[in-house]
Image 1 (tube, rainbow, N blue to C red):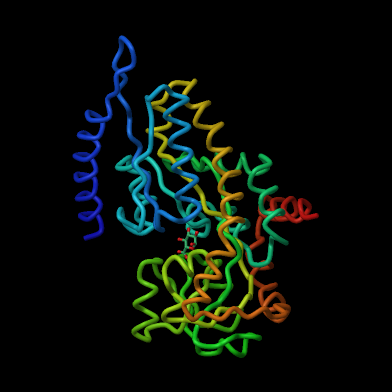
Image 2: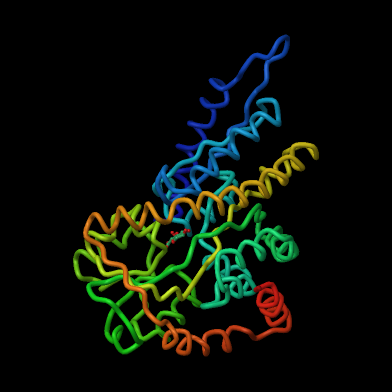
Length: 335
Ligand code: GCU
């Protein structure tokens, strides 16, 4: 059934892409430039900082390649949930997708280190780790899977929301809390006292509304964007995770570019991450204020009990020398 859905989407996208390429042909002086349009899957709205940074990326890419490339960004899970879009990128059905870091550990466990609870002190620490080049080797490791990691950007700090404030793991006893489809996230929320329940982001609102689960955990921007304050208005700053979001591109699309266009893409990918961090910082206060205006309450707590409860998750994940080395490198980059 899933395969059928993917094939159906491939057909729809192929048709759209054909017509797009023709209509986007632009004339510059003597010669006509055919624009190759990269389909980019995105699971959040057009107002999200990542969407806006992708638009800037597309404009700059179009200009720098003299019209040879641009993006068609499909927001709001139009192309499916993040897990399905990874398969579509691998198959070459679409060119790019923004995906939550925890999904990457299903391909290479070392990515799980980047998504460990309490590993980053703050967003500045995360920015150094994501943009300094220290992850280049890890990113290159996905080439054999049919895609490349172009950039890692911030998705803020994640906190728990449900129908009450939570101060210790005991408060989450018996509470089913949605997480992404990742072993590390499941282990993290279980260690925090909840009953972790994996599902795609698009199902969360209805699942809470119908009482299938009691809550979720996410950053303020997504919490606000998806109007989760309507069904889970009590948001507690547990700040247990700060996962990266990765921009991935299919190897087929990347390898089809000239060396010059690849270099442009690589340079703009780095700029994309920096822009995204900036837009993220600028967007948090407004997201929080809007959620509050719509009934949400944000609770600042001492998150030490949750931090202590999660130490076992870190100890259990760090199994190999490369994982321990990466962990040390990340921690050493903290101020
Ligand atoms: C964040 C993150 C997304 C992810 C989402 C989720 O919003 O930026 O990449 O999909 O959380 O919880 O699924």
